Length: 221
Image (cartoon, rainbow, N blue to C red; front, side, top):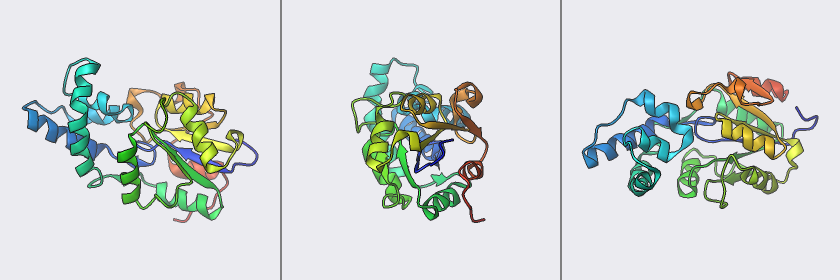
């Protein structure tokens, strides 16, 4: 852990927010619209961190080109549903409050498209709290490329060496490490069937309170 942490960056879906139920509801609605059978929720939940194509692939055994044709309608449906059941994971709100109380900045680096990310964090009342938000279409590249993480550091006004990156996918760890950040993998997210201990993160945690402990923060019950 850096001796003087100034900011913490987070992945969004599967790290800060449990959004799987709404993403699945949108897939169910889309499948009903096109006359296809919806896959089980458990199958979809596991791949949420991989994005829309992975979610659609759970229902449609098609190549990327065909899935991309389906994407706009699926995302339109999701945009209508995305805050119905989505909530911060247990312990996230106290963690963010503790970061703010310690005058540490926090931000979001996600592969989710900007129009969805911005509306979702607004509905979570995080839009005025986050020091940086970098979305999947902010740059020509996305995680695991380190560029979005570096841009978030720049926007938050912190050096990468003074920043921590937290995520629930191997791509988060890869991007954070390549950008020169201390990386933390979480076990409460969607994980894509992977083992966070195998991703090469600097730390693996089971609950947000453990990140607060690593940062020596006081968290309210």
